[in-house]
Amino acid sequence: MVTQEEYPALLENLSLELRRGALVLAVLSQLSEKQYGYSLKQQLASQALEIPEGTLYPLLRRLEAQGLLESEWELADEARPRRYYRISPQGREALADLTKEWGALSRALGGLLKEEKK
Image 1 (cartoon, helix red, strand yellow):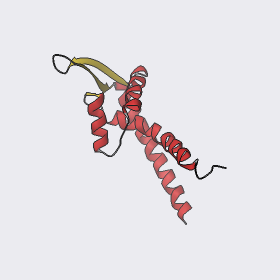
Image 2 (tube, one colour):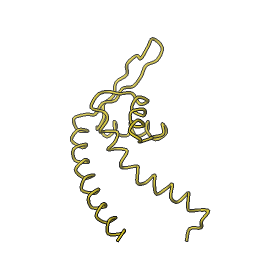
Image 3 (spheres, helix red, strand yellow):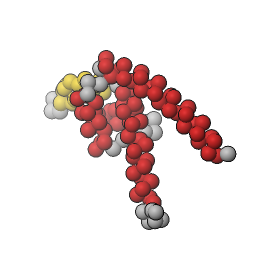
């Protein structure tokens, strides 16, 4: 049994688990045009989806290693190169499939949660 003092930490961990899979879908959905990490972070935040940099950058590298993203370095100005990411063809296919999966899961959970309120 979780104590009242332990409950906030438990809830935070459960929330992180819930968000983890959704972040992949969110990131893939925003990279049809190339963006660097910080601009992606800002774009997601503007849609009320905050992603800490410590979560975003490892996720971008993992998605690239899986072949779902492509990246290239460009000079942002004379001093700083930036790594720009864009969804790959395989990433577009995964995005379409994950979008369908998200819709089905959302409908199923919506029904379950409605039943729970009764």
